[in-house]
Length: 110
Image (cartoon, rainbow, N blue to C red; front, side, top):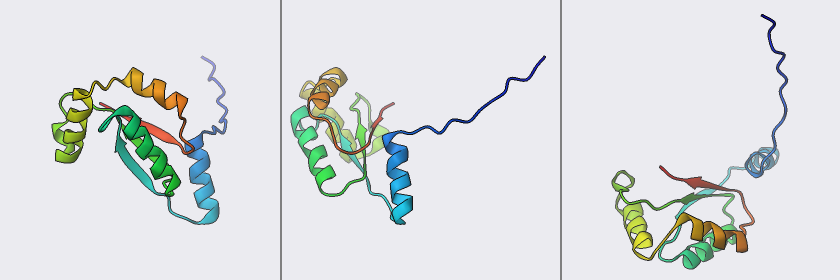
């Protein structure tokens, strides 16, 4: 059996670039968490843009779900309220595409 040659390729992504930029400047990054859809989809996207404008380097976007007990009362409240207000991931992503964020983002879900 002949071993397969492996080559390493540098992967770039907005997140990798953000961390590389912070390293070059010898700075720490600020990562924030916001629950998508709380209290409404549009208001949550407004808060995300405000966080970016305030200097957040990376945004972790929490996807609401029906049983967020392990996340504590604050995220639990936000998830329940977002779902009561009709949150769907598809609707959120459709709106976010219309108003893209200027910083890297991660979706956090279970």
